[in-house]
Structures are given as C-alpha cells and as structure tokens.
Amino acid sequence: MPVEDLSEIDAQNVVRCARTLLRRPLLRSDGPDGELLTLVYRHRAALQDLFARLLGYRLVVERRYARLYKSGPGHDDSRGANALSPRGYAYLALTLAVLTGVGRQVLLSRLVADIRSAAAEAGVPVVDDMTDRRALTAALRHLVGLGVLHETEGSVDVQAEALITFDTDLLGHLLAGPVAEATSPEHLVALAARPGPRGVEHAVRRLLVENPVVRYADLPPDQAEWLRRNQRRESALLESSFGLRTECRLEGVLASDPEDYLTDLYFPGTSTVARIALLALPELLSGEPDADGLHPVAREALLAECERLVLDHPTAWSRQFTDDRDRLADEVLELLRRMGLAVSTADGWRLAPTAHRWCPEPDGVPEREADRPEPAPEPPSWSLFDEENA
Figure 1 (cartoon, rainbow, N blue to C red):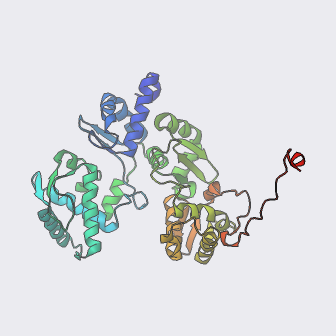
Figure 2 (figure 1 turned 90 degrees about the vertical axis):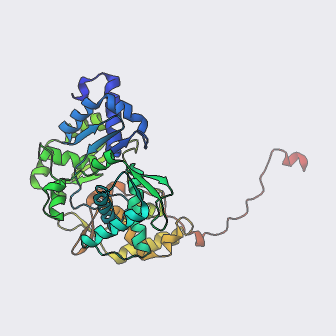
C-alpha cells in the first residue's frame, strides 16, 4: 500500500518507522529506538510493501524484533561499522559460524578457543597479540550491541572469563547474503550486492538512500541514464517515503536528512579532521580538473594546506592529529572518500567536482594567533559629566 493511500497520521508513522529501520536494520524491543517496535508491528504490512516496492528489501517483523534485509555494499568498504577493522570483521564471521554449533550458553574461554580453531581451519592466521585480542573483543562487543550475545556473568574480554548467553532467533536473522549459493568469498560479495527485482530502478534507489553522493560517472551507463530521466520523480519519492532531501547537480545527486537521524557520517563536522577537510577544500579544488572533471590532489599540497591551517589556529585542533601531519592528511582523505568526494586512482587521489558544494566562504583572511599584536589600550571615554566635574 503506497504511503499516499494512508491517512495523514498513518503515513507519518510509516515514514517514521521506515527511517528507523533504515538506521537500525535489526530493531529490538530492548535496544535503541526499541519503543518504536510496537508501531512497526502495527504497520508491518505497509512497511513490508514499501521496502519491497521501492528498494527490493525484505522485512521480517516479530513481536520482539524487526529485521530489514538490505543489500550488501559490494566492493565499497566505506559503509561498514566504524568499530570493526578488517580483522574484526573476519572474527565476526568466524564467531557466527561457531555459534551455530553450540548451546544457548557458553563460557567465553571456550568460545574464544573455538573461534581461533575455526580461524586456523579457514586458513586465517592467528597471532595472540594485543592487536589480535582487540579485534576479537571488538567483534564480540559488536554482537553484544546487536543483542545477539548477552553477558550473563562477567563481561566480554578475551583475557577474562565470562558466561555468555546468545539469542538463537536473532542469530538466525543476522546474515543477509546467500551463503549457501556462494562458491567463493568474491561470489558471496557479488550475490549480496545484487539489485532488486526491478533491476536498475532498485539498484539506483538503494544508492540514493544509502550513500550521501551518487555521481553519474560512477554508475553504469544504463543506471546513469535512468537517474537522469527520473531525477524529479525520485526526489519527491525519497522525501515522501523516507524524509530525505535531494539536490540534483550536473555531476550527480546528493541525498541528505534534514534531521540528521539517518546520517552516520557527518560532514561538515566538529572533529579536527572534519574541520581541516572542510577548510582545505578551496585550495585543493583550485587547480584545473582533468578530462574526467576530477581535481588531482598532490599529497605535498595537502600536507602544506594542513600545515597552514594548523599554524593559523594552533589551539583549535586536537594534538593527536596535529602532532602527526601525515596521519592528519590520511584521515582527511579517508573522510572525503567515505563521503564520496574523493577517489583513489592509480595516479593518486582525485576530488570529485561535487566537493565544490561544501567549499566554505570565509568572511576574511584569518590572522595567525601567534602573530596577533597586543590590543592597544582604549582611550579614556568622554561623558556628559566631565565638564561639570572639571
């Protein structure tokens, strides 16, 4: 049932639930935003139709939880959980495999031993050092955050003992990719990222909903042509169904959430890296673009701009970044990449022309804090009583 066919109140509730499920594809009654699960259950038919029709997503709704099965990101590694490193993701997959063969409760030491045994069996090297233990702990804590693991006694720390209970129902709903059909890891990634039943329409709309910037140059020709022809309709559809605002530009389409609820990556932001990246954009975009419309970014130029910004405002930044300028430059490029504003090529980094949208316009040229002169003393003020007192 389209949202337009519902009453105004029901339509607003469906949109609110849809936004919640986009942010929390595994929604639990005892988890974040869990108070909305009752509303999701009440409107489950409309929500299932909405996601299936617009995005080709499957939605399972139960009394205790709701699970929205999204498509995989393919080879895009910019949309994962920030707390998990690649090794953490490997341990997450190994933990899920191990949990399918144990009871509802297990000692943490036994679980860790089984995970490392499974890693050895899968050919994943295990080095029992601090980095390895942190990656394994991060994977287990991620499952605790999802509600799959519960710390019955003790807490998740691979160096301590604890009794762990896990939810078999939620465990069965975690995997979204067709593992049984895959013949290799690469095949699984490709299968999980398949477009929905409507092909190009679902593929492009998923990109608009899940990514901040969609550039025509990054799309296959059929998808780019479809998006150009349907810009206006898609803008209205995304706003009425998910509360997203779009900006259609020559280079592509930008989707944003005015309430920032669906935003998992903030730019502009308040962190040192986000502010440096924003202020560096005018200089990085000042050169001539190449034949593809991309602006080459020389690492020396980025380092020089970071150096200038740090010197102009030495007390405005976090020292953990300003003390290591190479790390700061790497973090700036990574943030711009995750935003879809920078791409890494064989010849180095390039900035997309859509980055011009964020170029700040300063009110004036900043003075370096160290070079600011001491303010002159103010002249004595004149008052109406001076003449009388004299």
